[in-house]
Amino acid sequence: MSSASTTFQEVLPKQGLLYNEEIPATVLCKPKLLPLKSVTLEKLERMQKEAQEKVREQEKQEELQQKDVFGLPSSDFSM
Image 1 (cartoon, rainbow, N blue to C red):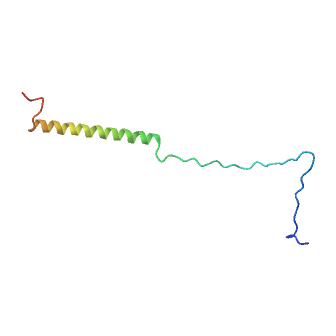
Image 2 (image 1 turned 30 degrees about the vertical axis):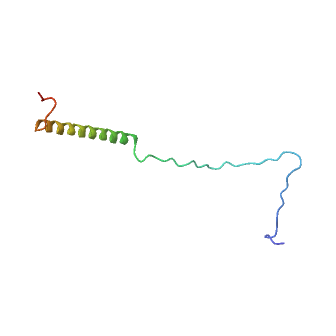
Image 3 (image 1 turned 135 degrees about the horizontal axis):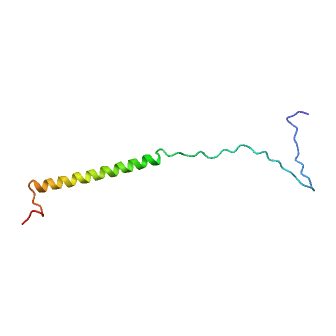
């Protein structure tokens, strides 16, 4: 008889208890994705954008005031 032709039949008891022992193995958890930007960096960028928007608004207001002073009629100076 060769070892390749040997087959084993499964034997299940007809009465009594059947025990199955499982050996605990190492379980790997899913990798946690880290944000590319930290919360602090996002806050700083948001503050910088807000500051740039305020500067742009002030520049637009200054341009409008200069146009009013240098030749365009203004509603404040009309008689």
